[in-house]
Amino acid sequence: MTPPWIRPQKDGVILAIKVQPRASRSEIGGVLGQELKIRITAPPVDSAANEALIEFLVERLDCPKGSVTLLRGSTSRSKTILVRGMTPIAIEEQLVSG
Image (cartoon, rainbow, N blue to C red):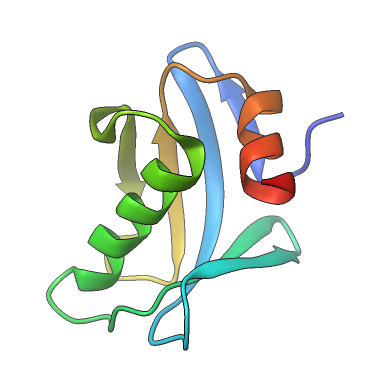
């Protein structure tokens, strides 16, 4: 069974992410309700935290940068991310286990 923060779609996989900017290091913070908490070192200024989140996900998922898109939440801590070209199981393994 997929976790509540992963929703398969026909064009990819939707991730519900809760971002904590200005963390001491970038890392997965665990599941927080219906969202996966990710700590990012970048401040929430001029989209720096959004860009750092995308880079963090690209690195952890080992996928092309163009396959990770911020759909909603550019000014919020709650983000909706679309990942193309990966299965929900592979994403869960890379983010939670990896």
